[in-house]
Length: 118
Length: 114
Image 1 (cartoon, each protein chain N blue to C red):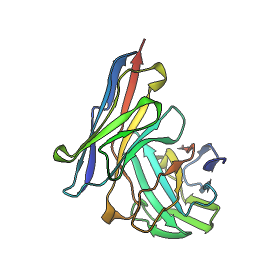
Image 2 (image 1 turned 90 degrees about the horizontal axis):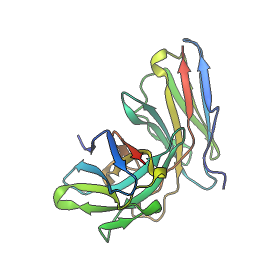
Image 3 (image 1 turned 180 degrees about the vertical axis):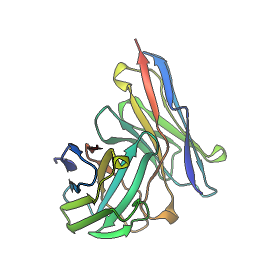
């Protein structure tokens, strides 16, 4: 399996521009997560989906951030307009729920997108 | 609020020495517990996890961790450090009442000296 695929790997943009990050989860996985990693705040969960439906978006910082999952093999995280404080590494992860009793799931992480907003 | 704490943001060990990374959680209900490793410019990779059963869990690359309910801890150890162990390590918890969300600790960066 190719693992979780993220694109682009690096993105440099200017303040005010729209940024779109992309993620392809592992085939067959039914959960998808978006995280943000910064030195100051560490690793934060932004939003996660189950079967393409957003379950918890309480970590999304503000209305400038939006995420979609139009099908089981693709998700986007969009920032519009972008600001310098959005500079971070954004990770996508996917997992597969096993069993019916809330079994733990291993989240598989992509390589991340390093976003720099000037 | 439920949280997970990693003691020490940086740890330096000599090659061949014991690696000990500390993780404590704050909850009266034991969560599911995870250790992840992040190598430079890469995503996170699962080292090991505890769900139920045996409290001593063995993972990849010679790492193991022990769940101690009385201490609300899940410390990660490796008997003999290797240069390739230089990375950042994250402890994470998943509380059953929190759905499928993982909460990560702040991370511990390990430096291995020759």
